[in-house]
Image 1: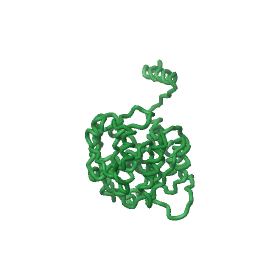
Image 2 (image 1 turned 180 degrees about the vertical axis):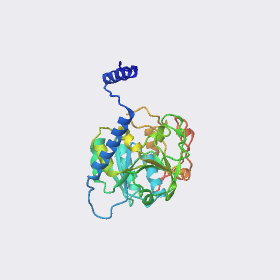
Image 3 (image 1 turned 90 degrees about the vertical axis):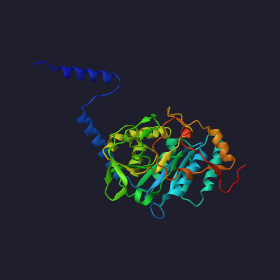
Image 4 (image 1 turned 90 degrees about the horizontal axis):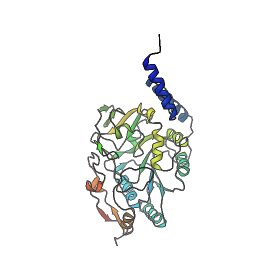
Length: 337
């Protein structure tokens, strides 16, 4: 009996794949490897010690990425102060293109004295991020970017009671989010079920839809296990927040096996007024970075209150300012010029 035609085709496809540096394998073998990757990650993470320190250990900690956006960073931090109950420490890893931006970051920090916000000056992104992650004492953590805004109330104590090794909980996603800004296309909403003991949460299956519904490693507000993040960050290469998110996505298949959780209403909204990164061709609003800096230097801030309580369905155009208003107000402690 000769070799079946489908075997010849499979061998030919494998040969072509190898020429490109790839390897084909059957689905069940791939799933077994992904399960093994997830198990090894959990095992290695369980062996990592958490740093000790004085005082009580917070239930979670946040790391904020910021570059040349003092006006937007101020909006994020003000919304965090207003909307987050039982807040946890935030570590703002920031970088400035020049001394004027650096001075503005210092002014942002001064606006929030008395809050548990630590400003960390970035030198090289990976070299600055790794020791910051190693310093976190909380067993759970999350990332934010400087163009995020908290739009609905979040009880951080209750939020952090979810085990991120069992469920991937994101605060950007909600049953109303039906449009993806990155792809500028509709994203079908997956099916949801209730979460026992958490009436404010909804469960879904990662990959049941596309775009953000198949993206469990989002650095906008996903609750992670700190040990797992430390391992993933230490064993991948990246140069900035966008490529860091891509590095985390190398582990996405294991995380897709975990439950997907979101809130019944979006807690966090990303408002991309402009683009400061150069790693990819993502959309970015047309607001001028220098112009927003001038607005900050004139003593102004973005008023967060118009966003509070909103039901966000996703931006449908590349220019968010066509769909959402930005209201400027005089910054507290300083009169507008």
